[in-house]
Image (tube, rainbow, N blue to C red; front, top):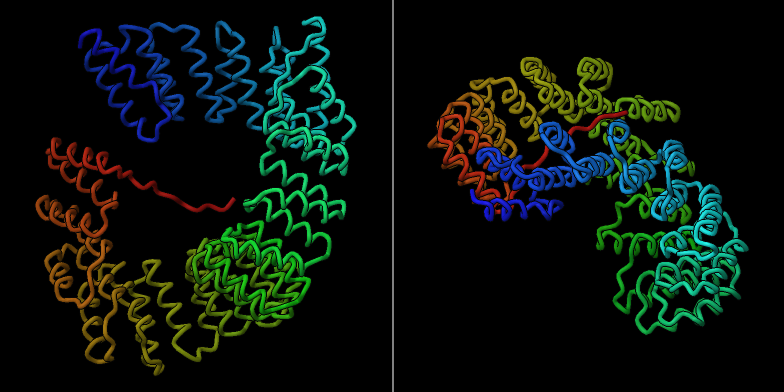
Length: 640
C-alpha cells in the first residue's frame, strides 16, 4: 500500500458517526494491521481512535490507545472525549488524572461529561481547580446547573462569571447567546423576573444580537412571570418572531385571563401550527371555558391540522368539565386513528374524562384494551393513575392488570394487584384465579400456579387451558399431557387453544409421537381444523427432532401460507443437522417472505463458516451490508 492509498483509506474515518461506519472502520483497522502500516504515521492511528471513540466503542478505542507506540495531545483528548460521550464516569476521571498534559480542551471535555451526567459536585470541584477558566467552561457549568434542576446555582455562577470577565477584560463582556438563554431560563424557573429584566437590559446596552432561541426564552420568562407589558414591548421590537415565541406570549396572556389578547396574537398567523392551537385550547381550558376550547379544536380539525399528545390532553380535560360522553368517545376514536391513544398522558386523560362523565365501564374497557393490544407497561402505569383517582375497577380490569404483569413479567406488582382484588372481595373469582395461574406460570412459578388451579372451581375449559399452557411454556411436557388426560376425564371438551397448549408441550419436550397422535386426533376425533399455530407447533417439533423432510412435507400439505417463522424453525433444524445445501435453500425461502430477516442470513453465514466455506460466509455478510440489513440485538427485561 503506497502513501497515497494509505491516506485515502485513512480519510474514510473522517465521518465516524454514520450508523454503518463502525463495521467499516473495523475492516480498515484490520487492513492497516495486515499491511503493517497501522502505526507508520500517528495520524492514521489517531483517526481510527477517533472513529471508535465517536461510535461509542470506548473499549476498542482504549485497546488501540494502549497499543500505540506514540501519542500526542490529540490522542489523549480523543480518548478522553470518548469516555465523556459514553458516560463512563470512573473511566473519564481516571483517564483525565493520568494525562501527562492537560490543555483547555481537556478541562472542557471532562467538565462537559460530568455536567451532562449530573455529577455537578465533582464538576464544580474540577472547575475550581482549573488553572484558567474560559467562556466554554463557564457556559458548561451554568448550563449544567440549569439543566439539572438547580437554577439558583446557575444564577450564582453567572454572577461570578460576570465579575471574572469584568476583571479580566477591563469592563468589556463577550456575551454568548446560548448561556444568556440558559440564564433567562433559570430566571423563569425561579420566578425572578427582576433579575431577568437586568439581564435583558444588559443585552440591549451591549448590543447583543438576538437570535430566535434567546428571544423565545425572554418571551417565555415574561409570559410565565406575568409581566405582559414587558412581553408586549419585546414582541413589538422583534422582527420575525417564531411560533414558539408567539406560543409563549399567548400562554402568558392566558395565564392572566386575557384570552382576548391571546386570540389577537393567535390571529396574526394566517396558518397557525399545532403549537399555537395547543396554546389557545389549553388557555381556554385553564380559564374554565371548555366550550370555547372544543370550538377551537373543531376549527383546528377542519383546517387539517393534526393534533398531538398535548392537544388531546387539553381537549379531554375540556370534556371532563362538560361531562359529555359522546365527545369522549369521538376523541377516543380520533386519538386511536392518529396512533396516540396508548400514550400515557392521553390514556390518563381519557380515563379521567370517562370517569368524570360517569362512564366507568368505558374507562375500564380502555384499560383492558391496552393490555390486549400489547401495551402492558403503559397499561400498568395507567392502572396506577386509576388507583390514584379512586376509580372503581371490576374483576375484568384487575384480571387484565394481572395479565399485564404476566407479560412483563413483574412478580411483585402482580401480587400487589392480587392484594387489591382480595380487598374488594373478588380474589376467588374464576376470572381473577385464571389470570393468576397464567401470571405465576409466566413468572416461572409453575408449582404455585398448579396449587391455585387445584383450589379453584373449574366451570369451563379456560382455567384448564391456562394451566396447560403454563406447563407447556415451562417445559413440563409430561405433566401437561397428564393434565390433559385429567381434563378429558372430567368431561371438559378441548378447544383450539387446548390443542395449541398440548402440541406446544410436545414441541418443547421433543415428544414427536405424542404430538403426531394428538394432531391426528384433533382433526379426526374432535373435528377441529388445525390453525396456523397448530401447524407451527408441529413443524417446530419435527425440526427440533431432526425430521426435516416431515416438516417440509407438512408445510406443503397445509392449507395456510407458510410464514418466515415456520421456515426459520426448519433452518434451525438444518443447522443442527449440518445440512449446508438445505440450509441455503431454506434461507432463500425466508428472505423471499421477509427480505429484512437478519436472523436467517446470520445463521446461513454461520453454516458456511462452520463448514469451512469462508468465502461464501463473507459473501452473505456482504449481502447483508448491501441490503442494509442489521442483526437484530437480543433484549431481556429485568426488574430493578
